[in-house]
Length: 483
Image 1 (cartoon, rainbow, N blue to C red):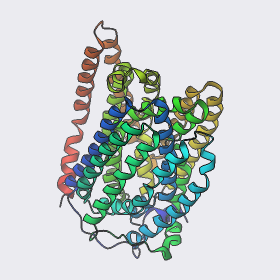
Image 2: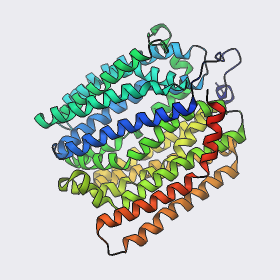
Image 3: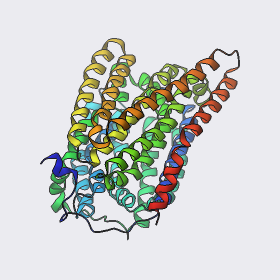
Image 4: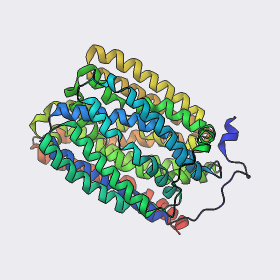
């Protein structure tokens, strides 16, 4: 199948017009869901970091990575395939396709349990309990994607709040008593189960939930370009934490995973909800070069302004932040915070560039890029990790992330070279604007808390200045697409 064929659906396959909600409400709901999720995680991590030992965090973190890889393999970008609107039956076929892949992957995970004992005796039990979250998510994945396509993400807010409350109470009560990694898995199962039950009950009349296994294979064949992307990119699904555990042990993995979690909070809060609501917009503008370029620039820069300020703030205040949030027992994670804070600086252009290429049918370019950075991560991360430990894994991930960002140089055929050059120039200036004032403040003989407060104000000013040009675009988009 040629890329031109994949770029757009034929008139016969185009889906009839679907009712839409309000884009402003959808964007706000998407961010509110993420805020609830991240606030819940922050509260529990800060509380439990003083209860659960770093080694237990390492075991739980490794289980999260393993289940995350399984989740990626069973989802196989099928929700993005459905959002792209390439077939009339995608929403009816999506539940059956995800159900089939879930069954296969859960059986595979069960068969691999004896191998996990080699990493840690507690890992099989922790992973098995956490894997139960995949069962309710078999239905919520399709429901979330369809509600997103309908711009009705407000349906997720109340279920997310209920699930967040369940996670906080369950995690603190159970973990304070048992102080083990599997206790966190139990809390995660409670959160996901309540969230799924409430969401599916509220949206039962709006989305397709009944799996139709007769068309599961046809769905996978129809979504083959998205499936190949998922398979090629699975090694970058936070596998760095698992690799750290395999070369340096569960305790080092605990310090690394906690640091990586801290540096990725704002990227998760920014990228996930923004890209979720922008996917249908990218798909709708796939034939308009100028509009697509404008959307890419504004989306990429809005992500960069927020994430760059956060990452530079953490890099220059890692010691103060870690000690205040998690306590002295986590001091060993400070160097990892500084190292992992670079990741979000390297990823936004590649992440947004992926979505442009996917929604315009140029998935093969993304596929080869994913294959290249996955190979680089495995070869460099493993070889250097075995020699120099965690730093070697970090170097491998740096190289892979840089290769991932090279996707932007494949965008001129979609949006033109002037936009690409302009974005690269603005990103360079942004990073300089963040780094220089923080370096100057670092030379000032002031207490750590005063330094952190000063840096926080400086980064807030940069974000406000940088986001101002984006406001007219946001207002016009919401006015044009709001119901």
